Length: 135
Image 1 (cartoon, rainbow, N blue to C red):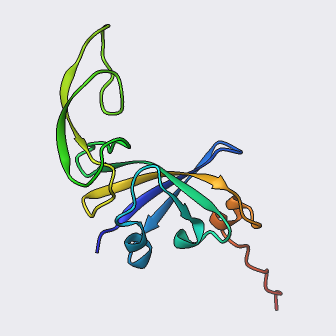
Image 2 (cartoon, one colour):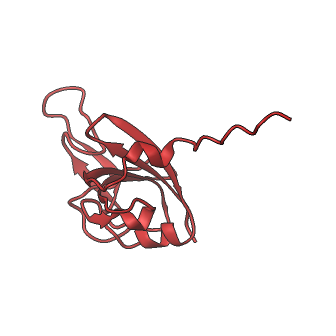
């Protein structure tokens, strides 16, 4: 089973949170595509809706939303995901991944679209332990 690092962005406060997706959590992301909106329950966030905004594989090759299917393709690109030209009119052939999430991906980028009842920050803060009485 694949393991993913999910970077979840919170547009309200500009924070980004790292989540290790393993086992069933990672399995629930397999087959989804960049641009899909998923339920936050899949990642452990009750009542949230999360949009997958991008992904990269272990060599750093990004996924593009407009390429259907899975796998890699070599495309002639002008300015877009995967290529930023240094001068006007520059184009270059680059390797790009398709939008479907497979086991080859390492990092998945996502953002919150709808918020749940519990604050997102509270999922990531360590819970305070009650102080034990000194004897």
